[in-house]
Image (cartoon, rainbow, N blue to C red):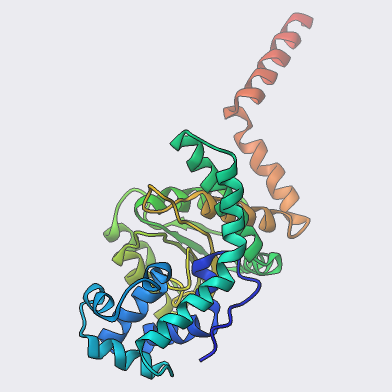
Length: 314
């Protein structure tokens, strides 16, 4: 088992998951027994912590026996748990370097306010996400959305406002956009998705803490033949395995369960890619602006000034 990690990975969780060891763990997560899935999930989410845990402590954290941990390590090709833990540490060393450099830069700013420190984490998350994403991948997804019969957008909890933002961006440029959870919860979302087909695309957004409903509804849409685009934080996310296309947004935060800053940046990047993908969208953008102009503050003031000037002339 090689511990080498992908040199292009920009965040520890994604970099670790894309390494040789990470890929083996993801296979266990998808195909292994219940106990092996629990261990693989813990390793993928807590790599730094694992390097300091003994076999008994890891067994307790995963609610399995020490014998199960040892057997898991051997199934991955290691002599014992200690060898597997060493491979985790070696893999982490290669993927942490660029992120630690960025964090050190933030720390050197001597930020005292937790609020400003949070902004620094948002900046780091967006930078790391940008480094790991390929522009052509976003472009391909944007082109696919414009061709879809309907684009369904799904997000629960803190991801619901991200889904709403994406739906607003897509509406002028896609044939039909449905924010499936707007105005209700799971029942409303399931009702919207009942008619999804192979001609449609579901964009699902889910960050920690993941919701079971998002996973089950996404699986239903995939089983119905729809193309799935997952916007999530890590290859260890349950939405990653369900996506035909996956866009990763770094979400680690020292206080919040997860940060949405990078996910919102990915959504905006996807919207921009779609808007600039063809000349027809320029006309669509102009038509959309004209339709809402009367409700915009600047446009309303211009129209009022023009109307007063016209009345004076007459």
